[in-house]
Amino acid sequence: MSRADEIFLANCKDILENGVWDTAAEVRPHWADGTPAHTVKKFAVVNRYDLREEFPILTVRRTAFKSCIREILWIYQQKSNNIRDLKLHIWDSWADESGSIGKAYGYQLAQKSHYAEGDFDQVDRVLYDLKHNPASRRIMTNLYNFRDLHEMHLYPCAYSMTFNVSGDTLNGILNQRSQDMLTANNWNVVQYAVLLSMFAQASGLKTGELVHVIADAHIYDRHVPLVEELLTREPKPAPVFRMDGSVRDFYAFTADSFSLENYDYHPFDKEIPVAI
Image (cartoon, rainbow, N blue to C red):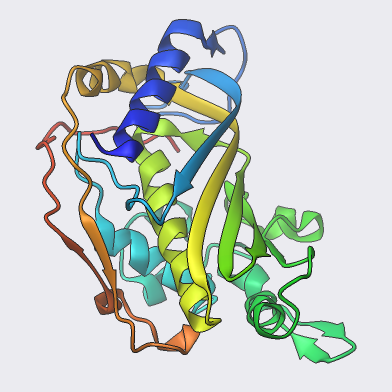
């Protein structure tokens, strides 16, 4: 059984059996037909993935591996806030006529700050510290800039990474304020597992654990039957993750630098409505 499946299914079962519904509250998200999109949720879900043991991708349904990677490269490599650079449609609902999502995600990573060693944006500062100051407990990125929230078309959901080096191993904590379990949970886990691997290899380190902290882990009302179907499935073994070992420059990675061997998954052809 894939460890990612085990964690995901246990989370979903717990939410459905013990979660709290928000049906009595006014909520911001809505469905395409204008109906409020209510959820059942659990507070403060914490999951650990040891990337030395296996790659954390679901097998009870397919996770779009290369699309996950393209989005994380768009945010952390290109540091872009324009969907025309992404060439995927997942951000279409939040983009304006120019393709911009406002001062969100990649925009925040690209902003430079002054340090004693010079001016760095957030990504380059992480790379600098991992090479020159790996014992630091201050190696972080943060997308949640309160000053710019009013100019973001969507507040960041996965908003910060904390990097920590133990010996020769890089570990990371992903903090997320809000998580749509069906559509986005494994998507985020996969892309940040890849991101952690990129930072590790570019810094001459081994990849260790990814810890995912979710403040509000929820299942939308119209997703409940789909999640219940996934809970009946028998997980398959995890695939083998491959990364081009010749790449040492963080900015030289492409989506083709990564692959999965023997990714066997259950088909899931149901249409999944997306709350906006």
